[in-house]
Image (tube, rainbow, N blue to C red; front, top):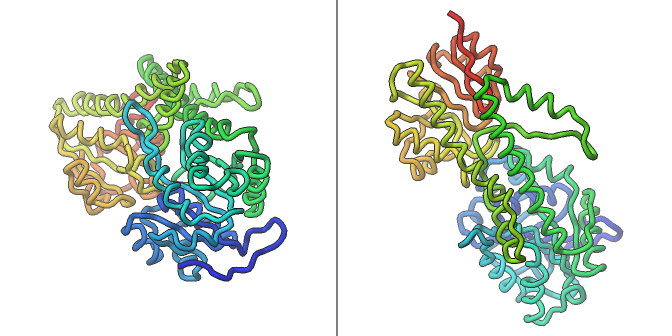
Length: 458
């Protein structure tokens, strides 16, 4: 399961060194595939037997473009192996921790998995190793929690064990490309920890941005995700006022984004179906909770979270009203395309689609769902809806088709030209994936966040 006897490569390359990745969820798996691609022999450790069985057979436990083929190849070549045991971690020169940090009570970070991980891995550490944390954590956690746990177990952080925090900044659906091009933010508990962490990341071909303290790096991750969440919230509210006055919000955003400002331009993001996934829905609350502990009231992140949480209800109201106006009734069939929180991923964590499906059902609509990236069991367990076997089955006889994940299977030519699509079905395009002019030319009314209703001329 590990690479005993691997030869050390001199210089800045890490091609022959073993790296241990603790926590083989989404981030750990993608990172491990990337490292194996760069010639690094990786040992993954996870406590979930389903993850171990899946990865050991060469199949990831989630869908992500190109990851499956690469994982299959690297498992077969023994560049990547996984285990539920920490044996072999002592051989690794670099240990990377990617365990989850879910939201706990009062919007605080639940550090249970991180603490358990450090307590377990400490029994296998040897002096001279570099320990890199990538789990999203409140500022001060690396120094005041992890470093103290290492000290209690006889390791002096920065001397016996080099300690670094390098936040994860991947975007699901394009994760491997993101990891190849997005600079790694690097920090260390001391100068040598920082230097060795930079050396590692540069050794696998990545650019780095060093910051002065562990706390600064921890804050970078929260700042990134809070900025995204706040920007999306503004875009969604801008969309609503544009709809109210009959203005195309996407045209407004395109024009507004041409204004030079700071080091770039105004960059209003695209309004959509709300925010999902494991990071954007919790990281702003981590910052709000941390700020509260320092007697600072951060109002904007909390407000943005609530704005984005309301978006699914706005979509339900839009679809319900559109059907009522067109069909003169408040019930009918609604076909939901996409259940993952975004396209090109199977991740359904905190997906806004769940609320939309349940709300449409409770409003009396017959709801069908199709998502080729998500298991039918997941949808049935969470919504009580049996997933359609195909796109055609899902959309047949639908009063409205609601596009809620921009998967390639739902591209315009595939959907609009489908013979099973009712000629007068309402189309709600949650991701601005379709051309409104073409949709309306085909006989449909078109809705999307920030677009006014485009009626078909008779």
